[in-house]
Length: 241
Ligand SMILES: Nc1nc2c(c(=O)[nH]1)N[C@H]1C(S)=C(S)[C@@H](COP(=O)(O)O)O[C@H]1N2
Ligand SMILES: [Mo]
Image (tube, rainbow, N blue to C red; front, side, top):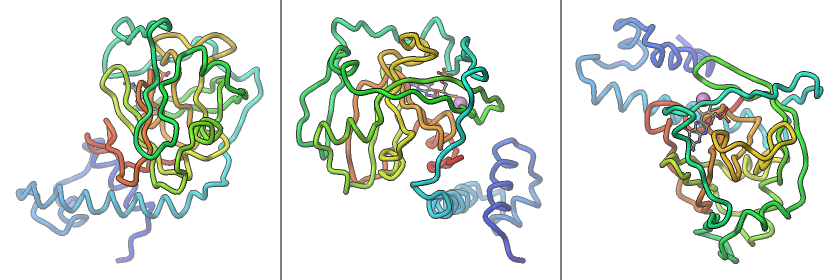
C-alpha cells in the first residue's frame, strides 16, 4: 500500500485525537502497541518525515490569504494553557528583548526602540489546532527587517524564541524571512493587550497558532532546531498552513 503525505497527516491527527484503533496503530507504525518506546520512535519518525515533506511543499514565497478589514474580529480570542488573568504583564519601563546566537549586534531592545521600527498591517486568519480560527488585524515589523537591523546571520537555519511564561518556539529561516511573518505590536489598531503578548507576539499566518509565540523575551539565531512547547508534547514541528 502506498501512503501519501495526507494519509500520514490524517493518521497523526487521528492519533492525537485519540480516535485511532490499536490495530490501525500497529498497521501504521509496524510495531506492537504494547511496546510504547517503539511506537514513540515510529511516530517520531513519521512526524520528522512529515516535517520534511511539508517544508518542501510550502515554498517560502507562498502567501497566506488576507481579508478585508470588515472581517477582522476586534475582541480576539485568547489562548494559552492558563487563564488570561495569569498572562504575564511585562512592564515597558524595564522590558528588554534579549538577543543571542548568530547575531552581530546583540544589544537588548527596549519597547520604545521596537515601536520605532517601520511597520505594516495585515489581516489574516489565525488557526489553532484546538479547533478554532479567527481573522485578526495585526500591525508590526516584518521579522526580516528586524533580523537585518540586528545583523542576524540569515544563512543560519533557525530563529528561536523564549517567552515570559516559559513558552518556547522556533521557526525555520525561510519562514522567519517570509514577508508576512511579523513582530506584531498592535492588534486591531490598539497596543497589543498583555494577554495577547505585549510587547509583541510573532504573527505568522503561514503557521498554526501555536507557532506564534507571545510576550517574547529572547530571540536567538541558530543551526540547531529549537524545541517547541507543543512540539515537545506531540505536535509536528513544521506545522504549516
Ligand atoms: N508565550 C506563549 N505564546 C503562545 C501560547 C502560549 O501559551 N504562550 N499559546 C499559543 C497558541 S496554542 C495559540 S492558539 C496562540 C493564541 O494567541 P492569542 O491569545 O493572541 O489568540 O498563542 C500561541 N503562542
Ligand atoms: Mo493554539
